[in-house]
Image (cartoon, rainbow, N blue to C red; front, side, top):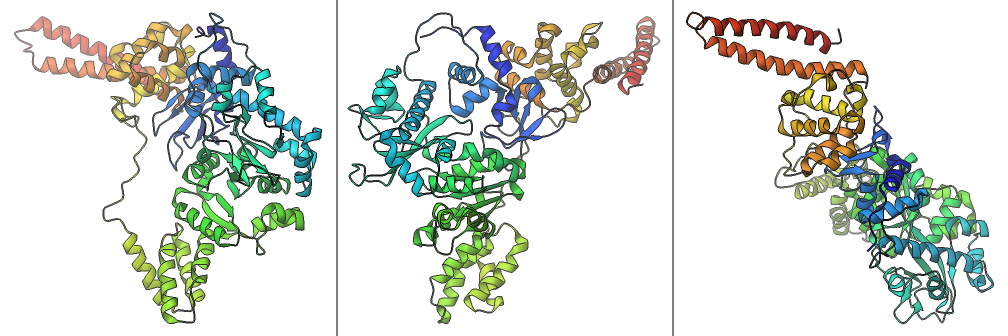
Length: 610
């Protein structure tokens, strides 16, 4: 096993890999003031952003689930990597040469090696497409209206028919058979997994190749499926990937719109036509995990966003629409359906009618509820009263579940028109469906962001502790402001009444101003709760501007609270002391009280910026 990564190289990786640049590949971030960015957490489901990134300090933290750390921690968590693999991933991306304490080779198959194998395979397939043997692949693309430039833009490639071409190529590059099997590029026995097919690389939002989708070209292809995909691997989970997301990510975040199509060529056709928010699921139906990915990219504008699905007009398309509708509650954004009347998919539509036809298709979208409702009604013979009532009863739960309640009456009237029944009859059925769907117990209210379960941390909203929290926040975020005489504006441990704040301040003082960074504090701490608290304070926006004046004011506020406690203690003791029998003690306490009152007045002036 290789030794430790050189500490200077690790610092260089952290310096070059800006936290906002790395995180924005996965989450749409918006300005939240005071040098803070905000978005939907990629680690748990939420509809209100509680995930914060502070670029100046290179940290992230989610106030909903409690996950946080620096850039390396984020890459570890989001890609399920070890610390070493995450550092190597970032070093490769940002051009940092890593040195190790020895030259031993790591054991086993690492995620980084699998990603490297896929990247090498993608290059091989692209080169093969433009070679003599790639003519069938080029013919396929040309017939669908895709030029060489378009193929290169999407990284389309070709898998030769020889059966061992890719494996031989990757072996020559130093990849082991176990690595190629684990990543889904080689079958046992040494055969290429993909043979004689057009291929599309499936990338994550950071543009790393996770797997491939392949289409059959030859009638004698031994694999029966028209389309096959990389099998499930440590880096490829079909329910967790969307084709085209690397290309559509920025536009989805900017427009709060996503267009979900059914195939790789449909994604290509949409992007070429100017619908650059198009994506497609890979080898599986669109599901809940896909919905979460899109939600995160839309960020805090998801509630006003749109997710538009293109379905075929046949039975399969109707079934797909019903499946998506059942998961409609997963979306904060509204859901829509775009159906081409003649049944053409976007690729064929562009081929026959041009780019404008695709833009018109998306513009002519209808609410998903309406599309599904019309399909339900179309299955009944409306010549009979009992059939009309049955159609209403099947469609009633659909209408009652519409998220925008202002639209319910409009759809209720539309349903009445479709089936030819009195609107009051339809309203009665919809109300009945609503009552059946109502929960028997009050729905649980979403919890306010708080510390992780079981953590003995002070509540961010505890007003009695706000001065302690804000002072520590300023110290962590701008330690140079506290390089004073006396140090730290004279703050002491006893100025912090909560044990967690006191322990954190003790660690801060031990480090000293010159070596104080949030990461350095976290490295010194041994208790997970305190590490978590440090991250919270490092990313929370300060209550006021960061300046020497405000640092002094906050320190004075904190010391003022300590002085008030001391005053109360002196006054309490004086009340219990007899001034006649304990003259000296009483006079000493009285003088101490006077001194504290004078000091209190001084601190009060400083604390209010006077």
